[in-house]
Length: 296
Image (cartoon, rainbow, N blue to C red; front, top):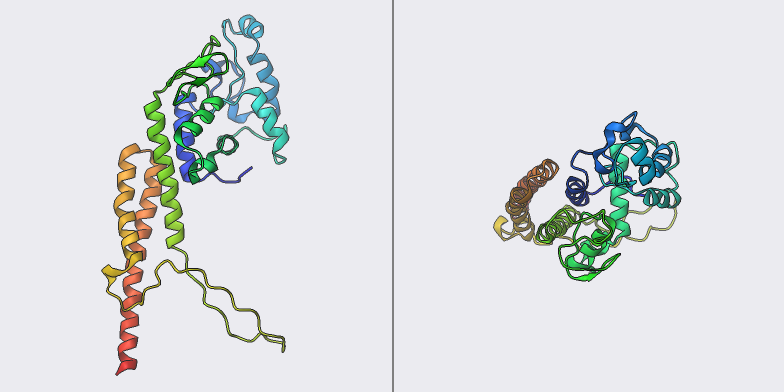
């Protein structure tokens, strides 16, 4: 299981969590967490799986909590008991003593996204409808984005994949899901471009190794993002224009969704873009001065 969650994936997880469990990481189905002796985020993974057996029993819930409906869904991303059991088998770093913290829930949520084809969606191998169906299968509150055969019957665009079970229904419009998915994919692309633009190509080394050995094979240079000569005017640099576009586009993305984590990320991107342009200008200036001295 990944140790960290990329910001673009966390953006999608925040969207999912706000729909599935608006009250946060300690939520259980029906907002019945007030019946628990301690918050969910302080319980162990094993204790939760054991307790979910009761939460998912209509008889137990009716006799103990007085409700007619039952579900084992727990946490910000409403993990079902069977899902947690499956992940415990697949992820060796999880055992029954692992605390069900907010951080662990985020990583588990990202793990579910990856199982549902998130990487293929980001790379363009899955379209909105295909990935939307995967999300709808994982989270019952999400609608399918086109008519399909659901778990219990045929469902129309906008309905839950599990419509007809008497328990689940879609809680968000398909247009909202499509808008967020487009945004997440654009954000992932922006992050990839930023990482690429920050890459510096190493030059092959001609230095002989110490100890009398043979020379090491030169390192193959990676294609440089900005291979122009440094005496080229600043505004003709591809790198400068890439960062200028990043600086302009990033705030627009922040305005569209306005989540705090997104805003922080955008601030970092903009700051780095400004710094990169300034450094490119400074290096070009020094290069021209040195070149002028040698030409003289």
